[in-house]
Image (cartoon, rainbow, N blue to C red; front, side, top):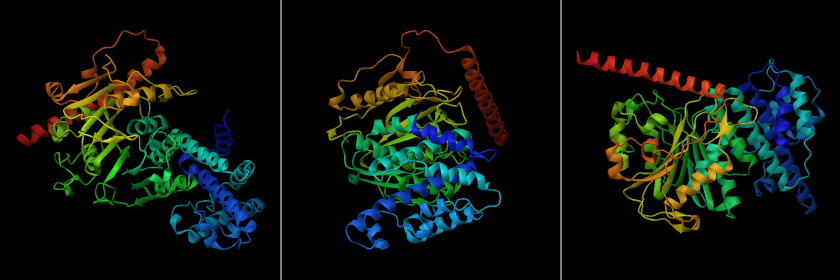
Length: 505
């Protein structure tokens, strides 16, 4: 078992009956406190060795290290962990750290002093994180970052649907990152959640011997609590980003209206109806048509396309309905997107990848200019008049220990990404070829013949027949979930038809 799994399992035992959504702020907040104290101690040792002032705040900030006041340091708090006021002390420590480090203002949780918080649980967590052996090296920070990231994912799984609102499963994030290859320039996420796309972008750069200084990160988040988690997540990774919070949301109040970005990665909330679409009918972002008031899917897609730079690429996780829906003018918008060469690639994902729902999703890869582009220092070929379709619905396997949650393997992620790279002309990946049942490069004429429906299954055809080795119980659960979703969609369509007929009478 990895140290991440071991530590989370031990921490989760201490949760008791507490709701996972509340507990995550306690566990992750303490883990962050352990990190900033360790980073401070490491920097302090170097300052003292050079004959500097160990309590000079500027000595720390100059090296992008958070300054931690004496009473807020981990060693001080751990020494007083048995004190009846330890929860209040931790809250005070969080406030002191925010006061000394303006970039953290409002980001840290102050929930430890509540009467409902079990003091024995706090003591247990402090002891657990104190026993995490660190030596002050860079590997420490990589380790804490991995633990933090792992814990976020595990809490999202525990919370189910609510967890899925702030966390995109790692295999989905990795797929988009590998496909669009963010190496240098400006990266943006309009609904950044806990910052997973940013963390993986930095990992991608490191893995390809790039420089993280070559990339600038921007983001927006509506949920203030999630906004705090993201800022802690990035701080632990020493990732500096311009992330902004606003209670109105990205679509209604765009924090970066005049900015353009080289890479955009997003997992917007699906099928949101209360997005204030009635107030935005004439918005300049709707180049391909005004989105329906009752569904924000195509508002998100067009927001992302509008913010792409001249050679920008955007990757969006979206509800499957976006590929085929015709209601509210969505069919016309999709047609305009295709004819305007805004769509580069469509990927149908398997079901059960997301927490709290078995409904499958898809990936939209958008391009500002398909006549060129740059990827990993290679000039891309002219893809105008073509769209790549991939059907990955048969991919994925159950996560060990789970009967409902699936994930894509590294090999599958690589296959999806490499297929896209060969298609768009990255010579190092080899030559592209259609694979029946998996991928197809379709022309605008072929897409028009399908009435601009972008479901990959319509284009890739049938692959070679395969043996069905899915256990009956799993297949039954999956098909029942699909059936329930279809019944719900049928009821929605019936209501919409009745409402439209009523309007004609």
